[in-house]
Image (cartoon, rainbow, N blue to C red; front, top):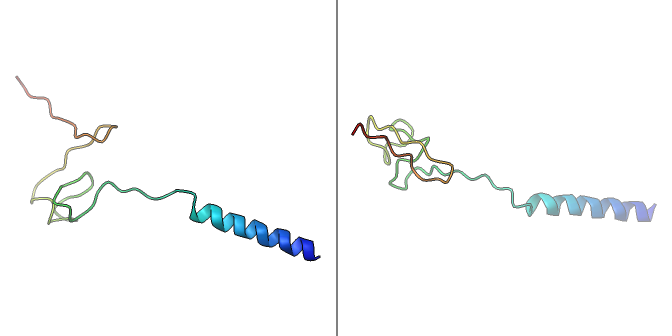
Length: 72
């Protein structure tokens, strides 16, 4: 019985350790207040970063901003 409690306690500790140190963090590239109108930010939800009527440009897979094609 004593060994069973120790095993359960060790499993609980292992699970807690795994959850706390798994490295899974939510990464959000949009940070309101960084003086950049990031993807997902608008004048309505972050007026300090985005001027009124501004539509942020979408990002490429590497995080760089998509450049509009010029007509010439």
